[in-house]
Every structure is written in structure tokens, then in C-alpha cells.
Length: 133
Image (cartoon, rainbow, N blue to C red; front, top):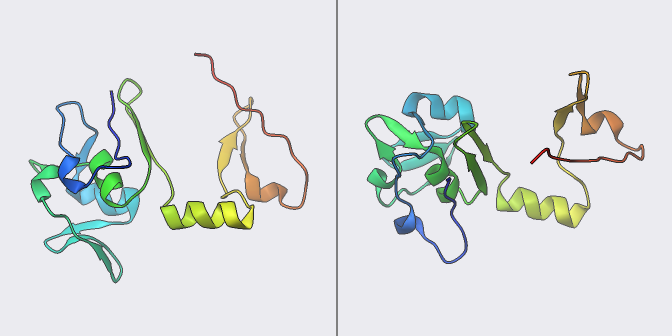
């Protein structure tokens, strides 16, 4: 089972689990655009302090769920599928709600052809989501 970072938690509540989604530190910039430096998680001129580096790092790997928590992004971990989904920042989510605009995304159709939401701007579309669970 994955773990998240929710209301009432702070960075000290994040702990590595044996089953946590770990990736190489060197892969972090390509995956999320952030780099783990001595001063914290950094992207361009912005750095987020990591109060306890051992809470996100172990043996040259970082816990993506813990990183998402420090960046104040929602995260879902499906360890069976080996999938980690990290959502947009709070500011981006708030802006999308206030502007009444969905963020762009891509999904495949039943034939495997990819379609982006932005391909259909100014057109009315119905998006049906379902699961086989």
C-alpha cells in the first residue's frame, strides 16, 4: 500500500517504507524536474528545504511519495502496477479551479491513438472514465 502526505502531517511524518517507490537520485530531475542538493529539493532558483534528508533518501535512492509530500503535491502509489502518479502543485490546482479550465492531459482511445484535451479546446466533449475493478 502506498503512502501519502495529507493534512495535519509535516515533513517529520514522512518515513521510508520497505515497499516505498524508490528511484535513483540521478533520475529525479528527468522524472519531476527537481534535483536533490545539500540545500534541499531544487528547481531553477527555487529550493524546498528537506529538514531530514534520511526521510526521503536511502542508498542513493529517493522515495517519490516523500518527495511529492515535500513539494505539496498529491501522490498515488500502486505498488502492484509499479506506478506512481504525482499531481500538480496546489497553486496549479487552485488556478485551474478558479479559471474553470482543466489542465491539459493525454489519454489513449480504444484503438491506442493518443488524444490531448487541448486538441478539443472550444469544442464540447464528454469524457467518460471507467475502471474494470
